[in-house]
Image (tube, rainbow, N blue to C red; front, side):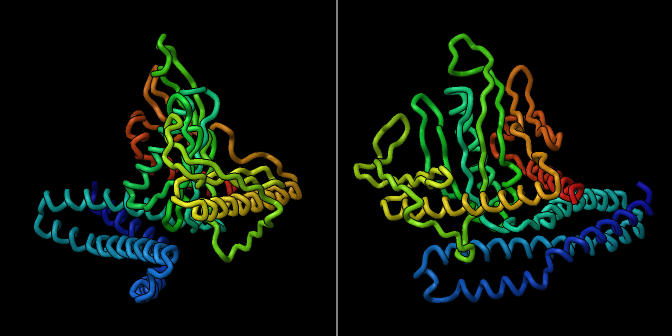
Length: 371
């Protein structure tokens, strides 16, 4: 690489980071961190456990975001000094280190740039994710459990807190459905591009003839409701049923009727919760998820009405958005972004950031084109 090319790359990196900083506003982040630190140090913080968890989660996220921006700015600003030292001493090793640092910073700044694309109305929210098995029988139920593990591992890899709210086990293996929260800012903005139908192709481990099976699972992502949203759910609009929680294969894990199922009569939306210890806690969790789904439904209806008025009734998202192929070849491919990898096991182990980032960029392009 010629020296002036290196200088041009350094200038481009600095310019890109300038744009990221204009969106993320490090000075405001510092103010936010200071404010959250004050709240976190309050002696009565843990009197309200839900509020305490939200404050500490937001503080941890803001601190990490600020550290990331400050560290990238320091490293970019150090590059001209590294380049000058390498030139003055005609040090090939030093020049190679400059090249490696430029490559690393390109990737890190590109990753951070994704965050600047999350500007939707609810993108900053925490997320509620529900996975349901679809066509494919026991293979579909097993696939739903594989997806559940994938997202939980993704949260773990990124240091995000994830809490399982409900699991409904299939009779033979896998899950009928599962619901969990990802409790970190911008979880909804990131995971919303994962919503849709996922398809698995493999040799079925449940088929004694070893035949290839195609199965499907649906992923739903909604923003977590907040008190300021004012989603009213009248008591006469819901039916509440209670039942006993159960584990895999119907094994009893609770001898009291603590599990709760809430049916929203006007829309037919059904929410079940059984992972809390008491009926009161399960009902509160179920109502929170119901309100979140009603919030998203309200938003979708508003957007559909706007599209209808504009004469655009094309769906933006197809039913099948990603394929996981384990046989006869190995590949995971997103059908919207064309992003693909040849290592499905890594993806199913939670390595899905590249798909999420590609989805966010694709969504932004769609929105820009529509505007």
